Image (cartoon, rainbow, N blue to C red; front, side, top):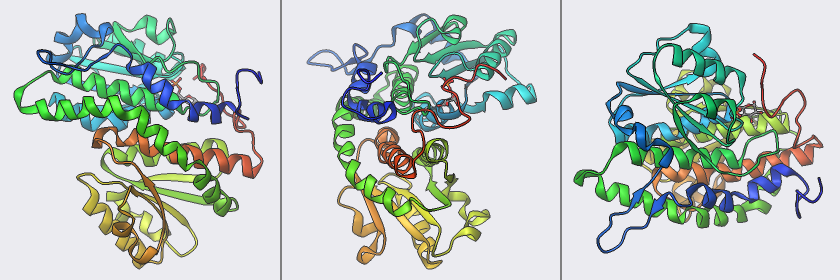
Length: 374
Ligand code: G6P
């Protein structure tokens, strides 16, 4: 066991720090750099026979549980943008509870690290019965979900042992960004955007390497938060998923109440919780939602909120005038890839909080890596 952890104390820690390499493996052989006569492009061999059907479908439905659901949520905006298709989200158990409508004209995408989660697998059977095209995105070759879908993409993140998913999350987002590029196709009008995303993907492992340097800073932050009862995380747009996933990490391993909040919903409830004691992480990296997020920060500050703001490098003064809040500065990347960078400090925070609070990082109480019963 010790050997597999290498120089790390825990699998979760190892898996967080492995992300530059796992992301590289996920993209290997799938990104084409372009050249004098070749355009930059993406190849996903497992989908090529079904691309026409996917493009002709009436909508795309993402289905998953836990972290895998959050990864799909992070990728939803770029898939909507590049495909122009409606993309809906389903938590697998909820789709089954409702027996929600799934049609033959749908493309359903099943996202699962293990490929064995009972609810997701059951939802896959349900979608097949309803005649939908079923695409699998898993980390486990020959898993039940990989075997029962019509086609799919392996994320190739390598074996993940920590119960709380980390490197699989970032690899899932990258696969779904590549999926968006593949489904979206190449038109003149989106060429610059596509190229920027592909360049961003090539550089992503470096940016993740850079953000991992925040390890000590996150440990220091964890020391400040060690005795808190609760931690809120506000995000929106591409980073609503980051808020949900950051909060899920803290809840799962550090056994601290944490909630991801859609910042646009702040006035419809969450604002009532704000006081000078409750710590709040606000994700405010620079993208199209930035000015709205600045206004959220102002409103939280007006209620004396205890803010920890995640912003793009060099923009601390825009989110924390006069150094009024603690700031986490992260490298700026293409907006749709920013969730991959932004989750890393929150994974580190959850990890350090857990160790400092004396809990089992790799096997949190009551949880299992793969939930194979309903
Ligand atoms: C469990 C794990 C989570 C995971 C979820 C979905 O709850 O503890 O880390 O996100 O299952 O698992 P899957 O293998 O389908 O991604």
